[in-house]
Length: 133
Image (cartoon, rainbow, N blue to C red; front, side):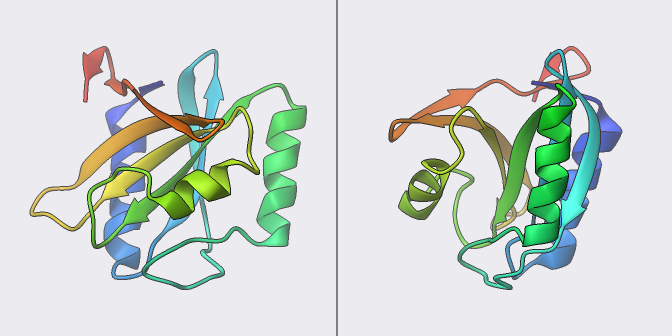
């Protein structure tokens, strides 16, 4: 995934602002490049998991129907930005969707991109304006 610094900053700021609760949202892609970031409410309002509400699920379907891709992002407020077992289980309901996790537990935010398929987790490179993140 390629992303401009200002879009990545919006995601990081969302994670920091919502801490200690997890945040969530969508990164909209066209041809592998991020073109928009959509913050959504974590209806679970939890520091340990996130849940997207019905209205935002409709937005997700509209994006998908438009031919653009979506990466779902969320934050980890107490741990590294590595998919938890909860994330892996949740991803089973979203085949073909990648995940961006923002870790805000350390001194500096840490952003990582993941592909979760059939219970297997693979890290994917995030490129910020031509430079690996």
